[in-house]
Length: 318
Image (cartoon, rainbow, N blue to C red; front, side, top):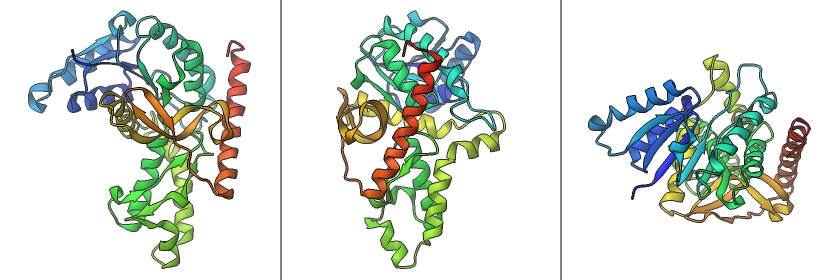
């Protein structure tokens, strides 16, 4: 029997996820949205491309959680996107309510699913989802680090005029303006990025600008689009996690995962490298951080904690 992937939220990311999953033939897709017409319309539109693209996948739209029953993977994008001038924190109140409804909808129908959350503010929403749903912590992750890392690699590749796939790097911490680009773990064609600065191939200021642009990567797109937020790259990143789980690829990916003592952090979701395979989050990878990275990481963790405290004020049930 084929795999079943349910996408909660048929907005821009949801529709793009459905399209990418169909093209990769990862499984059958159920696109869920309270706006039933949007879910059904996008599903039908993608399905009608199947003979052109040559994929074989069942794609349907619905506004009924029963149709998502027994999903292998659930990807959650439900929530309102950021508007210009809106902080990720402003989103908190609105999207907490939405995520609570989603948790109710999925916990009885697909208790064995692997759940990937993309809704912002990411780290707090994924933590709230896990608490509301009671899913095992290794089966609930947030998609952020892959996107942030991908943005960083792209900006660096443009600066150095090399293909992005020749760059190794990693962005950790909360998904927001305290995210930490791990420059000590950044290599271009196997060469540490700091060596390129020493050799005069990259200006230190340029690297600092890239780090800053990565932090503001989402806001930059929000401003350009004027009514909406990024969806192509976030969807691609979400699919990478789903594929690693479904095919047991055991890829090492930066995800918002539950930490229970790793990196000296307890009972908190934060962006760290994890191994994704058929057991969900099979392992948290602990990498060595230097003093500066440690400080930046702690700063990022503190901002996640602050936001979670704000969430608890909104809903004491958390």
